[in-house]
Image (tube, rainbow, N blue to C red; front, side, top):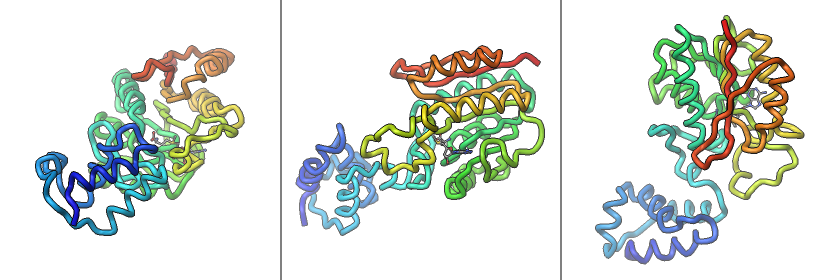
Amino acid sequence: MISIKELLHVSTQRLREVTDIPHKEAMILLCEVLGKEMSWLVAHGDDCVDVDEAFWEKLERRSSHEPLEYILGHATFYGKVFDVDARVLIPRPETEILVDKVVELAHELSHPHIVEIGCGSGIVSIMLSLMLPEATVSAVDISKNALHVSEHNANKHGVRERINFIEGSYLQGVKGHIDMIVSNPPYIANDTSLAIGLSYEPSLALYGGHRGDEMLCHIIDLFIETNARILVCEMGYDQRESLHVYAHSKGLTPFFYTDLAGLDRGFWIRREA
Ligand SMILES: C[S@@+](CC[C@H](N)C(=O)[O-])C[C@H]1O[C@@H](n2cnc3c(N)ncnc32)[C@H](O)[C@@H]1O
């Protein structure tokens, strides 16, 4: 038996090299294993507990830089909990801005058919279904494994019947006229060496080609081909110039948005009807 305070002290030391918030992460892991709230841990610091192997195993995984979300099996996005594992990218807070932008622009359209390219864990398509009840949403991913996760999350949030999940590349398998295309595609250049935590995430979700913006350029081409009205994409902080040039070479005017850190993070293109 060991007191909660001591246990947290030992665990915090183990996580110091891995995260800027070692004490908080140690508390999160302990809460998970004990099935308690943070406030309970704080109030019972002097209590002695007998943690089983599950706690040390999770601590070991986190000390090896595995992302906390994979260890817990869930992540929060837009205030909702989504199940995640190594088959999908972990939701990033900046992707909430992509959802906001789509919702804002979708109001210009009546009963839009929105297609997401690369749905991963399903966070974007699921939030769009919840926030835009008049929209029809199709969610495509090339990874069958990722689709298992997104369909599970759609079930969990009660919108499974409202989203057409499609295994395919880009728009392969999508039926009917498309009004909006949305994507947070892989956009890291293939030769980029990743921080150790990122190496746990699927490479299919990270690498976008030799330059990194190849998938984004191809999505712009598909936007033109399909005659969709609006395109909204997330992108890398350093891809504004190349995407601006590419869109203009196709006769389109992109508008860019920034993330909470003030970095360029995405763009939208609107075509008149
Ligand atoms: C960066 S992740 C985004 C996942 C999720 N939409 C999000 O925002 O967290 C990109 C996703 O695109 C998928 N993907 C990669 N290449 C694709 C392709 N050619 N067609 C469709 N999906 C693709 C990957 O499997 C991955 O799930």
